[in-house]
Image (cartoon, rainbow, N blue to C red; front, side):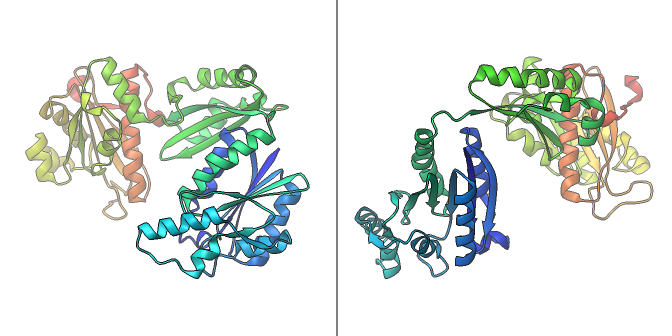
Length: 433
């Protein structure tokens, strides 16, 4: 069986509202084992709504519609349903009672528009919406099913979880289940990963229903292996050969196999295992790195803190950078990054210190140090080095990428991996050579 999703609303098309309903429904249906093969977003025009519903009923086992059930004049979905199913409006008394109760609690008078929401086509089964005032509706036509839900996300989610999914399980009890495995990868570009590290991954997907998706974002690549199968054993038989290949080929770049895995969490686990702590000195990233770290629950066990040392005065006064270093080499330099990393460890009494200093942009670059030039420093009792990054002209992206790369540097050192992210070469402090 397959599912089509239709989301209705001009505000979705023009970008006033982010279409979170579509992504949530697609994810929820997929993880429940129901294959969503089309998502359509349309305007609040009756002709467009009618056409989309007719297409869904013709092509999909189940069509789910969200939006257009509110009390305002641009909510026209229900009028289309009356026409489509040759239905008459009937009052659903439990919904009207609920509407009156909700509005009474808010000291809002019941209007004609509110009462109108309690009327539904006589051809539908009402999906009672205790989270809002617009009921959901369920239709069957010639063995195809149509669910019509409010567009308010909390209401849509409630009805999907409590009404739609249970119905689909009863109607399609033998549908295959969805299984997936995730690999979170850092320190390598997507094209390099595909072309040089796992170039033969297609051998595991040809002639099978195994899907391998590469999902880059925020300086991290998520590889998702997914399959529809009757049970976990069958799924493992299809996923494991491809998974073993990825693990063998990309081992040094894989930092987590959790869908929600983060580099900061992995770094925290490594520090905890080694009974070590971390201190951070941030110039160009301006606290972004510390933010990623403090997103991890329990990070206080291994994170000593961070210094947002944006000015030269703060670099000198708070972290002990030599004024001569700044005067001779500048704030954006290997030498300054090295001193900042060491200062972060010593001043914060941490086992590991890291630093970021660079030209975030979009202005401030020079021929010698163009926008996107970033130095990352690392210090512990055995190593003291810096890496030079040449990033982008986008300030936000540079802050993000520099922070992610810094975390990956820590991960690789603590894991005993000899290579650095993106093949970067460490430049060591003289005393550490």
